[in-house]
Amino acid sequence: LRCLAALAARAAPRTMRFLDPEGLVDDFAKAMARSVDMTTEAAALTRLRANFPPRTGVVFPEALAAQKGALVETYEPGLPLEDALKLLARADADTATAAKRNVAKRGLRALLQMLFKDNFAHGDMHAGNL
Image 1: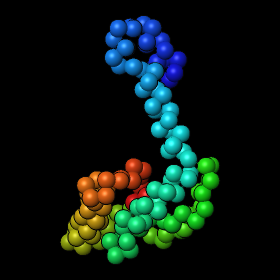
Image 2 (image 1 turned 135 degrees about the vertical axis):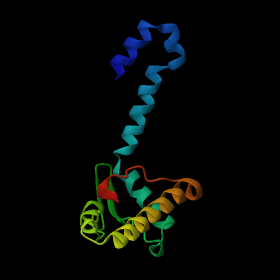
Image 3 (image 1 turned 120 degrees about the vertical axis):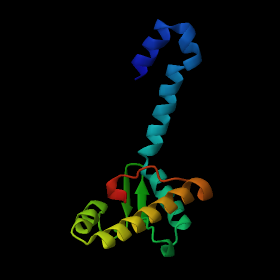
């Protein structure tokens, strides 16, 4: 990316002076370095756990130990969302609809809380984290 940014800066210097592709790549590199630092992830988990006490129905694992390249956290039992949806496919329509609404409502409330109340959002919401 650095090479492409440098080429772009040379190819169209007047335009790129405003876009600053090399600065964008530097910012991206810093953000990526922070995102793979497991001590940062551990601090985020601690904050998220504090923001979502157990009564909310939203659970984040506890960070037990962290170094830059490794994180040890608690196991949180649960049913993967994909498996829950497969089970609901076999349920009657009313039960399935109510359960899906409950899950969606809980997820939306958690997301809105992170965005508007806590100003701190979990940005890794793949299926394994739901």
